[in-house]
Image (cartoon, rainbow, N blue to C red; front, side, top):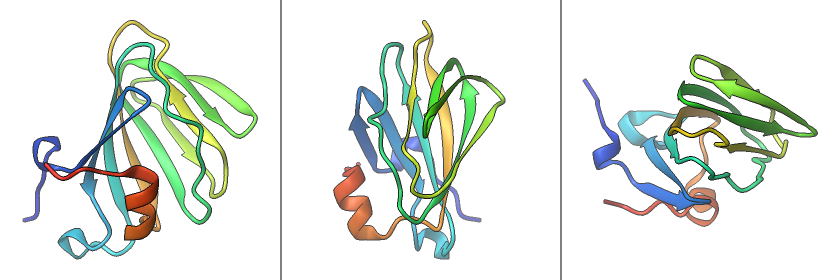
Length: 124
């Protein structure tokens, strides 16, 4: 069985949010998926960004905030899923008073050059 945790995953700090790369391309022989856990303290916003070839979902596991996808925005809360189509600007903001956490699944997974330049995950 292959397992990992946020304690042993590479981390990227951006916009005041901590993104932990739980599953990278090639890890555990994964070929079609990347998984990230993100903690968003109150008042933080992920920079608006897009992924040209990847589709992505955000699954909110704790807290509440606002999700921006293309020209739309919506309140999000625990138990919600947001789908982000390829090549679409998106970001998440925690405008609540408690920690917002979500899991992001991305397919196809990011290639290492994009991973290094766009996300700059730091090994632990």
